[in-house]
Image (cartoon, rainbow over all chains, first blue to last red; front, side):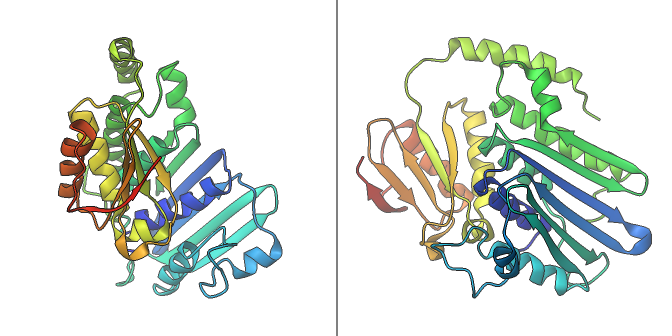
Length: 187
Length: 121
């Protein structure tokens, strides 16, 4: 995949298919350590030991039985190709955490890319999902929490076009602000 | 930085829109969001659908499906008008989506050159 934000969209699909009600996406831009960390946490049905072992293996999963598909193996491969790694922590019935680390300045690291479109696509398609996006850089953080937005909206759906449009601008300006008004450094 | 205060204003606007909305059944657009779809460009298809429906003030139900086994034809998008057959479009680009929305979703004419499958209800 050309962008890390496309991997994120893909991994979140796994969460949704695992009946997650809440998904948290955490981006940590640790420039001083030359690291970029992406974490995706959900409260879906989780994986057992066997599923966890084979989740990142593209040749073990079959379409009929797979819950995770090719997405995780691609994400792991991307992380490993830039001096990083991907870890799966999961417990049956509790949820799954996917954590990937990248060497930030590695030549093969894909850009984060269009994260705002990834987020609004998830929200538009899954308005009932409780989505949290945290993006931190040094000591600053941008947070989007759909529960907070929903409490402002009352009976109006978060998937309404006008709201989606506003959210996209909110995310773009929030991230830009995090980078001191500069273009996003990790794109 | 945009503020949550702006949301209140938007909320009132949307409430007005909701009042004028008719009760009839909405057309449905279904986008393939499996790994194959996403790597082939499903997110751009989604973005175009959002932009076009907003621009044209269309009330459309948008939903997703996983990998349906036609990975080589991704990105895929289905259109289902109320009471009509479900049509699958494949190998789409943003401009194709605009065409499908104008011709099929709004005017009810299937875009034959982009359609790859039809499913009777």
